[in-house]
Length: 255
Image (cartoon, rainbow, N blue to C red):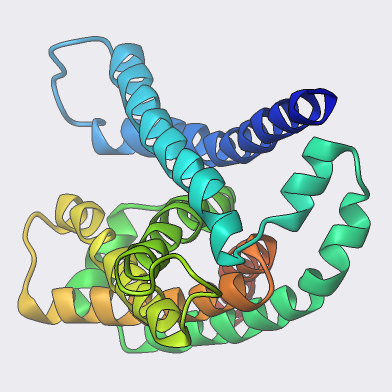
């Protein structure tokens, strides 16, 4: 009985830390993006209400992703060691030690990749992006943390669990083929998930823009998914956030 009562608060704290970390990105993105999107629009309700509803919707989706990860990831060998350490009172620094170097290396590679992709951005997308500016802090917090919780911790865990449950009978470690299936599919979904924002920015989507957005983001999704699988969620978070920082610095130096 004492052991069970000790485990339950830890899981609750674990999930709460994950959700709060993701909500920081949600709130940051929402309060920075909605005023830009509605600057020239006549809203039927006050702006604060639109913002609040958007935050609540995103918060609910994030809660589902966190819950999925809590339920499924430990069974599959997928980890978020630093968040778990924070929830259980263990050393967060020790938990991050195996992850931060590879995360930064992944971020360096991702940042260079973002910079190179920017050189080949379709003209219509480049021109549209000039009218819609997403601050670096929003890219790092939402992209680096919230998206990793949604796409890797929640969705990728589910996509690994499904074939492991249905085809492997929940025995042993998931086969590598199942993990790669989850990495690739979650990466493609990651790319597709960027299309609504691009459509809102441009007004329409051409086949060239769709292929570029989905293809480019899928490449980075594979990188972050691999890091999550092999090193832990925090490695993917560090790599994703660092990619935006490295790309921003390179673009600033070039401009």
